[in-house]
Each structure stands twice: as structure tokens, then as C-alpha cells.
Length: 218
Image: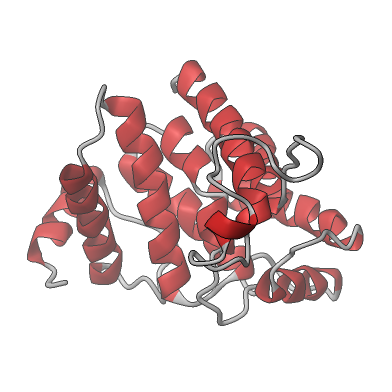
């Protein structure tokens, strides 16, 4: 586990979140005229503000610490935090995440709370997995647990995998190689498809994982 990578991931998420929040929902054509370039904080009189992206990243990090490698315990701890977070009626919360939070209050288990949506909720909180977890199959198990808590569409999980791999790639390489990152992400997605991304909750050993990735057509 790389302490500097974890700290950098959380701080980078917060800074990028605060810089980008004013542009959320504004078209690429309008944003330069309306706001200018995202080179400084523009949310309120030169100040920035974080959103649910950073809040979820912090909740995931706290739940990872408490879980100590146990995926099921992580899901329960994150679900507990998500339930109380929803009660605050956070601005900008996605429809799928809100529905999943209310399902948790109605007694749904973490494995059954997700709704069929390909929204970006799982992706926005996935970078911390790539920064914090060294073992690849274990990282993907945690990405899956986090994703399915709110979103059951496999496309949402695939987006989260790509973000986790972006953080992992940045952690392990001095310079970013976009083609290598893409190849690593696609390989992982192939393996999740080979082992039934819609049905199975666990991943195979690292050796079998890479074998499945090579055999699966994407």
C-alpha cells in the first residue's frame, strides 16, 4: 500500500472536484464564454467547493480502512455511511444513488440495493481503489462491491474499473502512457466478463485472472 499515492489521490480528487464543479452541466461550447478556462476556482468569488465526488471518495477510504481486506465488511460499512449521507439531501446526488440509499433505509442488503443504471457514481469514487490496493483481483472485488451498492448495470462497473486503473497506472508509472492504461483496463474488463460480471461476486487467482483476460474476446 502506497501512503503517498493514497494521500495524492484524495487531495487530487478534491482539487479537481472543486475546479470542475462550476462546469458540471454546462456544455463544452458555453463553458469557455460563461466561465473561462478551469485554471482556478470559480465556484463563488474565487473560491472552490467539493461535491459528492470527494465525499464518496472519503467514505470509501474510511470503509476500506475498517474492512481490512474484507469485501463484505467494506460493503456493509460503506452502505452504512451512504444511508446517513443520503439523509442530508446532498446537492447533485444522482438519481440511482439516491434510490439505492433509500432502498438501504428500507432494509435492502448492500448486494441488492443497486438499481439498473449506467451512471457515473461508481466511477467518481473508484480512484482510491487503484491508489490503495496492490493485488489486482482484490482491487476489482472492491470496485465491484462499491459499484453494485448503487448501480447494477455492468457498464457502471466498467467505468469504475477504468478510473481505478487510471489511478493505479499513475501510481506505478512516472509518466502516463494512455495506450498502456487502456490496454490494462480492457484486459481487466475482459476478465470480469469471462468470470460472469453479472453473476459472480468473487474473482479468481491472479494467474487464472490473466488467463481469462487473454482468452475472452472483447
